[in-house]
Amino acid sequence: MTEVKSLRLASRVGQIQPSPTMAVMAEAMRLKAEGVDVVDFSAGQPDFPTPEHIKLSGEKAIADNFTRYTPNAGMPELRQAVADRYRMDYGLDFGGSNVIITSGGKHALLNLMLALVDPGDEVVIPTPYWGTFSEQVSLAGGEAVFVATSEDDGFRMTADVIEPALTERTRILLINFPANPTGAVIGDEEIRAIGDLIEDRDAFFLWDDTYARLMFEPAPGAAFQYVQQKLGERFMIAGTASKAYAMTGWRIGWTMASETIIKACGSLQSQMTSNACSISQKAALTALKSDQAPLAEMVAEYLWRAKRLREGLLEIPHLRCGMPGGGFYLFPNVSHYLRPNETTTELSAELLDEVRVAVVPGTAFGCDGHLRISFACSRQLIEEGIRRVKRFFAARADS
Image 1 (cartoon, rainbow, N blue to C red):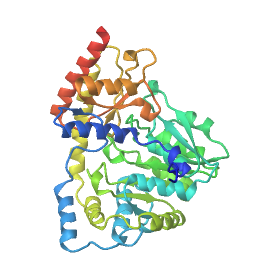
Image 2 (cartoon, one colour):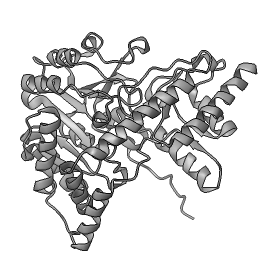
Image 3 (cartoon, rainbow, N blue to C red):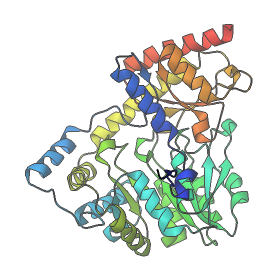
Image 4 (cartoon, rainbow, N blue to C red):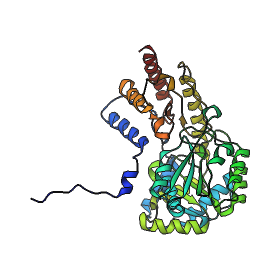
């Protein structure tokens, strides 16, 4: 009998770590499907339904049989609508030819990494950071260079912190604003100063603006205009409809860059996914071109939740928690409650097991001692979650 050899996978698979966030969400969903009463603070997606007028647009697209391929880079009218939205919201100068429609925000980022990063190139990433950033750099053969921000400064990215990390090998400076997992934002002057850092370098400024439309204060559009004017074709954006318009499952994102880079992304996309879903593109077109009032209502509710959840967490002795500037996450410091040699991975597993509260450990974001707690859930669940988390940490303090 012939001996069966072990299955060999490509080496790149072994270099990539599965998403810890998705793993926690999957476990919470499994427990809820079994009837377990779980307070899910792990979700990285809005709890609001997609606004009705956007859903109706998708339904109409199906009824109209808009179910065939679109151009690889996306519907021309949607590409232009993305450019127009950024001009209206931030005063940025992009045309439809500077946009490619992707299958979600992750796809937008991966397009850029594969188009621009060669082996040996470096991508500078402030931490705490969303794990997908570094994993995609690895997929492209590059090296992620992490720059630690300070909790004492609200985890804000600054030019002084970033500058020492820049080298001749720096290819991309990746700014996630507001940041996942901290909700940290930076002001007008600091954005300008960060842009100035790479003016004379062969490097790109990449703004991941996933949570930008969920800011609690107006976004510093003038600062990003300055960076675009200063860097020209080396200013890029990776965006998505997922968070702002409660469209995570529709899988629509976009890359914005020079025509040369967009064409390169198009070549890659043509051999990977081709066009994004035609039905979702029609829905996204409505989202971008219609009244933005539903978005403002969601932001107002997120702000209330952020304040209430933070207020409840700060009633726990020795726990520290800053106020986010946008998004729907808190990133409290729970290091006082960690046992010797314990990480927040173990602590979060115990939190789920003992009081049925799902959170994402700070280890997933390169910052142990913290938990990412999502307030993308109802006010009722926030109140219940506060009660359970208080009970959990009170028991730990007594043990």
